[in-house]
Image 1 (spheres, rainbow, N blue to C red):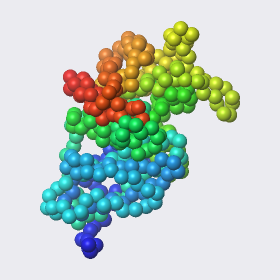
Image 2: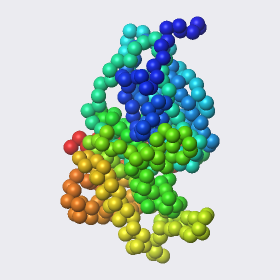
Image 3: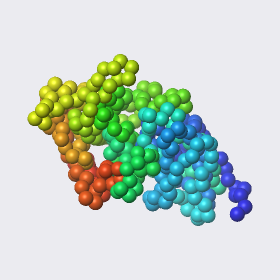
Image 4: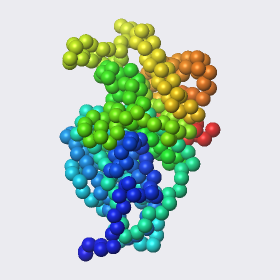
Length: 371
């Protein structure tokens, strides 16, 4: 096939008719994609479309998903370097195609070299105005919200970026069904107080007010990952918090020892299997503090604390936190929502919730938010 001589270049700093998903900082060119589900949506005519991207990584290569007119038509690994990727060819040039391109893989706190940035597009068509979404939703969580295990065979156990995808994620499903723009803030293994292995440095609430504060590396910092996030520019109608699963695991796991100080941190259970009262109170207070932070930055949002896709061992702690927060703040716009537990066909790769369970969770959240 001969090269299309009619392709025109549209760089991100000159492209007005485009919708951006996900948190961004001061850098817009090239456009950094930090979090799960970050990406772009647009309407474009033409027979052919290419995207110019750049990425690097040490351990965890990024993957992207491509939708055209609402259908998931492509998913691929992006190898290191700067390159052009064909999104479609030989389509009806006069028809406007709705294109969505998402980063499938979460921000990786353990890979300081990982970044993914879009420079622009080449097409023989034109970009048309994108219809605005009717709502905005922010979703905060861990591996479940990152879509870990939502693709791949049930027996897959390797912890690799191949088994992440945004398009099977309850967060994206919920937003799409409510015609909502969305922003996801999530990290596998992280929790309210600690990670699954009791590391207190892996508390997602501690990074919530940054663009993507857990990202490391020069390219991410230059792109604005460490900047304070400007909440005023994007106010959600609802905030869904799905944290607690890893804290529950931490109570059952060994303590984490700081390699620099030698100090050990542990969330404890008593000999009879009940939760240590001091550690339970610490989790409740941290959850309440996070609710205050979320409310301060999102004064008008409905806040749902969703929990349960991998069981509900600390549900009573979360309910206590929400009850006490509501009483102390007089904020009546907060609620705990119990989500269906992944069982049977609802279990996906890496013993995580699969697409069936994510659909079940989206059903519950859509019903609750439609109220």
